[in-house]
Length: 121
Image (cartoon, rainbow, N blue to C red; front, top):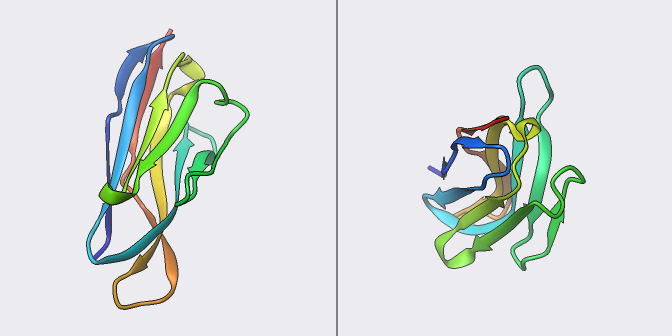
């Protein structure tokens, strides 16, 4: 069984910072691209940032210069450092990873349970 567990959400004032973490566990062969998505009330889920196994990154325009995605391959963990937070960043943040399970050759998408980030004005 493969599992993604997120942590680090919470309530913060505008202009503040938070760091989210997401760790993949289980019988893993490899963890490929890892992403952070978010979904605000009444809105569609949107891609926030992505990082390849080699460390290449991409960001949504709305978070460029404020958020940083990083990963530790030895720990199968991805991080999202969020700075200069705005009320518009309020959402449930989800981790997504493309994982090859041990004993298999195909990669599938797995999702975390989500962590709430609330930014007060």
